[in-house]
Amino acid sequence: MTVRSDLRMPDFVVIGAAKSGTTSLYRLLQQHPDVFVPDAKEPEFFARDEKYAAGLESYAENFKDARPDQITGEFSTIYTLSPFFPDAAARMAEHAPQAKLIYVMRQPVKRAYSFYVQILKNYQNVTNDLSVHRSFEEFIDPERHANAAPRDMVFSQANAHLPDTPELCLAGSDYLAQIDAWCAHFPRTQILFLKFEDFVTDRPGTLRQITDFLGIAPLSSEVFDKQGVTRNVAANHFRRRGHERALHRMRSKLGGLWALRLLLPAGLRDKLRTRVAAQAKDDQLHIPPQPEKATEEQLTARFRPQTAKLAALTGLDLSDWWN
Image 1 (tube, one colour):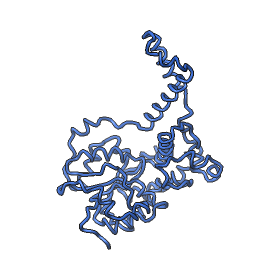
Image 2 (spheres, rainbow, N blue to C red; image 1 turned 90 degrees about the horizontal axis):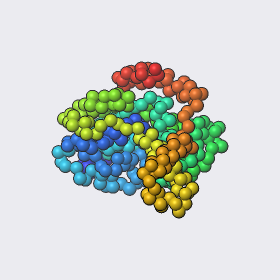
Image 3 (cartoon, rainbow, N blue to C red; image 1 turned 60 degrees about the vertical axis):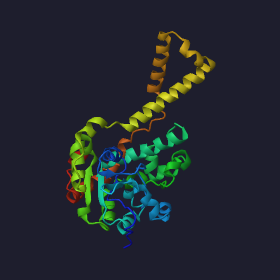
Image 4 (cartoon, rainbow, N blue to C red; image 1 turned 135 degrees about the vertical axis):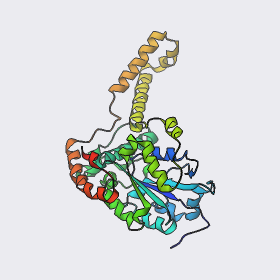
């Protein structure tokens, strides 16, 4: 085992799952005085070959500003995409065997669809192409995937490391397979399993489980009051993008008159704003379609049989996943 004692390695790692509240968790732990997490939320060092090849020194840079009395951690959700990044667990066990692992899981069908939406959001943000070139079914169904829009009309450069395969959105919801991959290298006692739905309904309680697991003081209640309610980031993204599209169309329609809108009487400006808002509400072309009913049934048949074994393994009550 190669462990560099002269380099700062993480004391804990949130290994997943993607789209299970890890960003909100990161922002909360970022405010804990006894915790240091890097500004770059997802280093992805142990998963991606090109980052791992850069060497441990490059990874340790993430933690160089931590105080000696702080524990360090990082959040890389692709660590639980083991079919595509199969070496992550073994590499971490070699270089950071002491790390405590935190794995947050979400209702698997909803998580898979949310991951698809995230890919499209990334594409829209980077390219400003607000069209939806693939449905969820065109991502996950092999036959429909084969005839779907090409990769460069779906994936942004930020997701260049992700494979364009029907299993991309689904593998992260195969929790038993992911847990097996990590338990092959880390003892069960070093892994804390949590449920996204519990985090949504009881953030202080979930954070107390985490701080107890990490052996640090509970997070101050003032932090929760300051952060407020977790926002629906996807809904906000598509609402904003719809408004941008409506503004662009109105600006194109009015041409040079657009610059004179501030000279209009207040009543007319209000009507113009109302018109833009109505067009934004009516415009759904930039919003990913919901999964088809048959798709939900198919994925339920795939993931639901795992629930009893997963609950026994993790100690979590997963009964609300299928209500």
